Length: 576
Image (cartoon, rainbow, N blue to C red; front, side):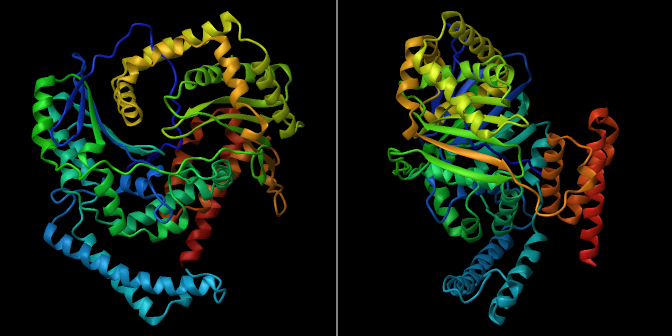
């Protein structure tokens, strides 16, 4: 099963080693698609990827989550990949769309009854009309017929059969990225497969994949201790900006997005003039250019520029606060509205974040080591394409409160606002950034990723032009931006308290410390959402890895295994 990566935040940071230029050759095809070429002889592999300059902020209410849904759909094959009979496949897809439209009418009637308070749960099968159930049965029969035509995971199989590895994708607020590592002598395969899924996509299994995404949301958000609270905090922090909704989408939208709406979104944002591809590795640029023109060049250009998000965040006028009780250690999150990627103040905010962050950073030294008020503390700037934020986090030590952590974080902010950063402290951070970035640029995959990500923001050239901006940040710059953005009326605060169990504490947790109890509760939540087969596989992995667990975690592992066995037995009893 392909592992879907959903990136919720990208922090542009770190200047590179001084005078280090990344020698990229840029090719622009006639249809507007950009191809970035960076040959590196020696390694017989190529890190290959392409980026669609579209993420969740390009959506609208009603279709939130569609950008991430498309990440899934792009692996469902084409007219030649993933099917045994394309004509029959397309006919079934058309019939499925027609029946789904009729089901939508029935669902709309139930939603109207729910809106009027006439029913409690519009998804209750017992409330369906005979016609509604008949349509669902018809839809399921069509799905079963289509399943006989589908070649599962065909896209992945073709790549791995030719020695490619690491095929995956990710969706963020601002972009969607697809990537794979291919042998240098299989570069033409990459051009053909990637262009084919752009030129001849067949979004088969659309409605079943919509349910897969919904399940992903349940696992990653609904079933985690703080997932839904974090979504609520996002919606509180962003008043008008589209960054307020989650990348994975709202549940009601995931249940309602139609294939027609998704196709319209694809036509707008997956046109070649909204795409950039990149190759880093052992290849001949002339040959790669010829292949790009032959394969990507056959895709028709879009009718115009893809629509950009219009709504911007309105200025915040007063502090916002949220208090939540969750099955987590007491903690605090503080956010300040800051600046988007490329803003003149961003370099100073990024460097400030690096001064605060890490084991040698100010927050850890002050809150964890000196004051012993927290077990962890961090902070940093996140500059997205259209907005930005600076976030501080701290987890309270046993016996201390999140309010104490909050005040300790403010104290460190006040130091930044009133005292200049020392020359040695500032230069140490710059040196660490330069060394880290230099190492990062040596890896083909990371360089490919950075080039594409930057091109989705302000252009790949910033990988060369940004480092001097970070290197030139002064102590005065940091003090100025701290006073500009770190004001009470510009912040939102989330306080998390530990939720007491509704029933008696499980006696098996008595011998575990608080951190271990938290981990067990999180695993319990995951197990509750798994089906029988998934649960059996989960238990099997636990039992196989039990002997490799460190002695200090053996008690916790035994508790989790016992709980998994109990859950599996109860699921089995329910199914009989």
